[in-house]
Length: 335
Image 1 (cartoon, rainbow, N blue to C red):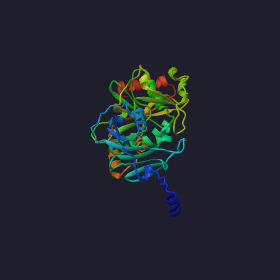
Image 2: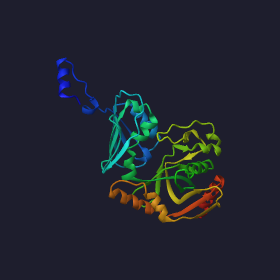
Image 3: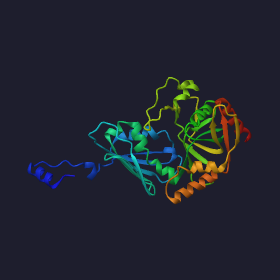
Image 4: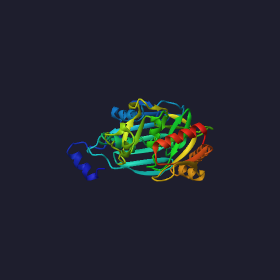
């Protein structure tokens, strides 16, 4: 903001002051496109084709499967004097709003009650797709992860229409085992995260079946991963990302009905077996990352209880082929 003295000087020289236009005169958002991340309708309005290209890369393969009120996203692309990638955002929750603020030209405000998001992103940030998609453009998924569904840190595969949820901490082997199952004829739903649908009586989950991420060590098990370059990740974690459409032998589905929950325990030297697992631990594992209003969390807690009506197991294993075979036996025999 200019001082009075600065304004006097500018006026005396007959030059109009240059004000940051995007802060006082937002650009018209004349471009609009509808997407369906995880099957839910989302309407994006923006002033830039580059922004729509980023959303297409993230979401265009998803098919609409739910007739919910569309989530609405308004995105302003603004000029920046810098060509460098912005810093990692800081996050604030002031219910019903969630904010991610990197700097004055890169921030997101999501209203969870209205399912509406306002984004400002710089042309510098848009040149770094991994950053832009992970930290800013993907933030409106918070609306799905509260009022519409319950996020669960798990992979998911199905066989003969029966779904197995593969739970565990990072590094437990969810992606590796999901892909190993898919290579042996299972249907792949997700490798690391699913959304359990809120409401109703079903144990239905939806996931991103269109890509799979591996840790570099996965090249030891899968020939198709060997020699591939690491995929740049905004979080800095080394990974190899593959689109599943490039793997013609892999069957995929956005949705699955969960019939079994399996917590993975991959420890060298341990006895390989499938045993019953404590539901109170499973419950706390699924609840620990939830956020939102008391109303939405109550709905999510109810969805988790419906999910926990099925059996919960722990799979202790060291050999991946043995683990795939044991899961197949579980699906076929129920134990």
